[in-house]
Image (cartoon, rainbow, N blue to C red):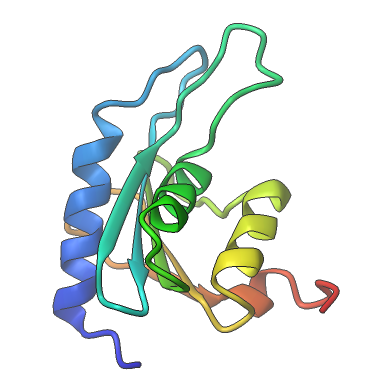
Length: 130
């Protein structure tokens, strides 16, 4: 499926918007928007817990919302955070592989309306077991 520049912009806009709802204990608010193979968008933000072992990362929040909606497979994930560089952690990559697969596109935007850094999931974790 082809993802257009307009698709990326809409995903980023929604990820930045939901990022405003992040529940923080630490410093970094993160937003995520997932595009399903049905072209539906699901969003999530990080929800941090005072004991930190139970934090919900934005990517997982968005991906599990997609799964709860019965929307099938993820084809793209956009992550937004006020950072210069950012990639999903290993746990989030597990979810991306589980619900999107190795060809799922993963993009990061560090400032609204800036460009994207985009990778396939298998580029971020080339030795992921299959």
